[in-house]
Length: 513
Ligand code: CA
Image 1 (cartoon, protein in one colour):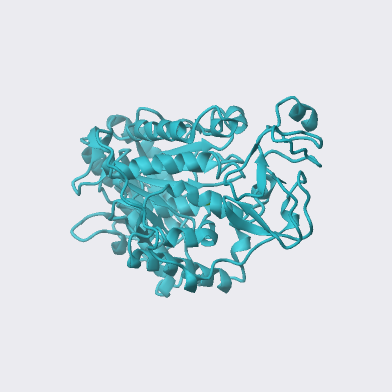
Image 2 (cartoon, protein in one colour):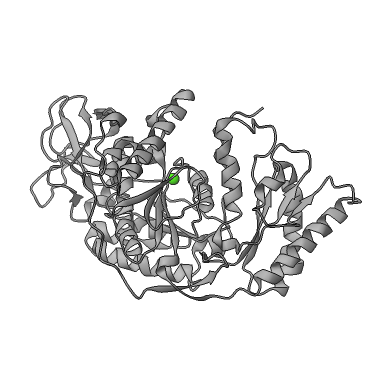
């Protein structure tokens, strides 16, 4: 069936760099053997959409080149027009962290972009939220059920009285007890919880629900100078569950009253903190959605915003391209430090970088992590990298930052929230219903076929770039404008319209006990 459908369109492929000796098939559902491209190349086998065909004969052990970079070596001779599937490619070694060029190709500052604004909620500390949410923290998983019970009642009984508040979100998690709280790596989950509560979308209102006997003392989640912010379930003053829930609701209402005074005001785009992520990637990710996002990221950087890209295992194999863009030696060294930390983290678990690619990535045409990484880093645009954040660290700089996180969608989302991200743009080729309760997520499809099929899950279609219907620049500008609209609350992404959100998921590389 697929081959019949495929044969009706003019066969097209995309070659990204003049050095490339492979190109990916553009046509929906792929192309059958015998398909002839405009250049005269004829396919010798069926090639699925997004998969690679050889443009020239490639000898055994010769490099296979995409994005102008080596993505692997031919395990056996490959003829022009054959399908270059993952089984035919030997993966290259990861770049040696001791031999990287640092700050050797720092891009010149991009021309400033003036006059772009959004409607945001300005906080006393100067940060600006895109949503007005009461976030309720917890110091231990034991209280999760209680919090969810209380939040259900807060939503039903209190929230309608405070129309300027968008939502109440319980910041629940699996951490807090039964963990090696003093292990060196415990700094990551603890810092993440501390900084999550400070996300600009929560307006600086802190409330922590605690059990009372947990290892993570709830005081550690309350910033200095804030008092009366903890409800401890084991407090002897509480006579039964009802009294505990009443206490949570009383504390919540006091904060809802304050948050309800917040209203949107016009803020420069420089006040945005935008997170970039991808998930369910395919071979089009690096051709359509990520380049468009990279263009939009450059616009944001030019407007003075903070933008962060992440996912260590998806930049590790292209790190040599990023350290050159580090604005100075310190930032370059910090990039290398985060890569080295993750290499040893993976080694401790008996895994390596090849653990990243999923069956869906491979089905979508991504042969290995090298190819995936080259397509992934494109979303960081073309500006200098101005800062590096360790997992869960709060961003304090402007410009393009690398926020070190795992590539796991929900962990990356959680860590970017802790870093202060107030809106995330998420590119996907295979499709995911991913969403976050604490910040809006714009989902961008790499292919029009996906955007059509998931018309009520995908917010933005970047697929027109592959068919030539739109340029990267046009698509990037459209995406930039959508970011301002969603940040302003004028447009609601699909995940928020349906109310479908992923769990907060902490990154805990430390032992559990
Ligand atoms: Ca991801």
